[in-house]
Image (cartoon, rainbow, N blue to C red; front, side):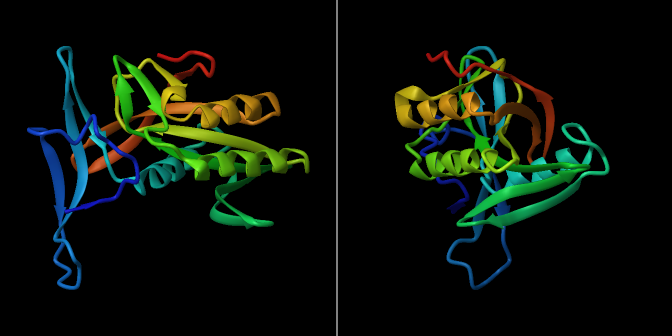
Length: 204
């Protein structure tokens, strides 16, 4: 089985967890199945969580094209190179020029979503590269796509990677806009739904 997720996901992939798989008919693949989503059962609720780390960018593109964050006439391009960096999205909206990075979130505890679930030097690199765009007149956003419903707040996971949280807090002070949104997840779809409160200074 192939898991399209680079995080640890140790709180999700536990014995007895109900998972949903995609069956491939490609005979050249090493594995026949892709892990799509998993049910996380707590004493209060059952969460269906998307596990495909490639999907948040697709969901973000659909969401952006709905005109929720920028105008419906905004020009949206994916995987745009800028100097030595490649950002998930580049948006032109009138005179505004914007770079936007997406981070998929699967870690949750008692209604709190957190990122990252494993140390990510690459994540810090993305933040610092976005900061450099600010000084040259671009706007910059980091969008945390929480791949589930049922969360109330998003925080950086300082216990797992304090340096990422510190970089995120510093970036916000330098002008990067930090947003979080939740998602409606089914066994064969994911759609960004509502904004989630972001608190960069709180940790569990």
